[in-house]
Image 1 (tube, helix red, strand yellow):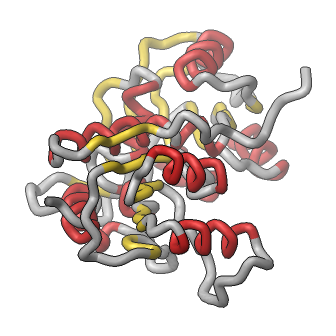
Image 2: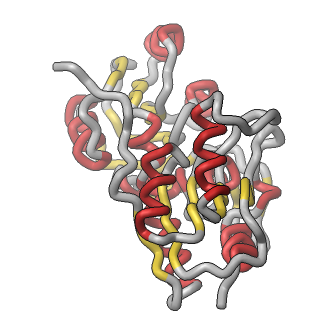
Length: 263
């Protein structure tokens, strides 16, 4: 029977730890490596809804993109993260996360986002290395779409990702060469521009970032952290199911974007 250690090795096979950012905390967040696994729940975040869903389903392992604990410190019931960690441990549910390693990995977060948005001729922006098969890896992806108006592309993004709304600024150009960075990649704007992109899709953008994009003449779209990263959960679940056909791998139905639009 497969164990937590086996699942971790599988995840690190397609999203190796060496691909993560130096500050990041990835891998086994809690649990026993030798614990047998018959059910896995996959979600974007280890929020309480996902933790409780794992228990209700009888899953021995929760696999997420984001970490259970972001900072070193104490695990107590005085914080939401601490309560979630205690809940998992008390119910013998292990937790594994693949964060920036999955962002950068071939076939990970940003390749998935590029595919969802219909980009073709997709490549890595500023590769930082190659994997064991010689494939380049790095944070951002870029590709092309048939030239279209910004309004038309905004509609496509909203529909493809299931967003309630988008925040954007026009750079005064039609959309053709697109850069994508799931989650908070606004700090990478200069790399999108240097790569010759006319449009950048990411999330968690600050006020000044929109002004910078306006001044620099690039279309900038904030499609939300959840919506730009959540598509990879289905890919992650599929990879695990293919690797472990004897295990039931379930995609979370309870976890959703906590932020809403009032319209």
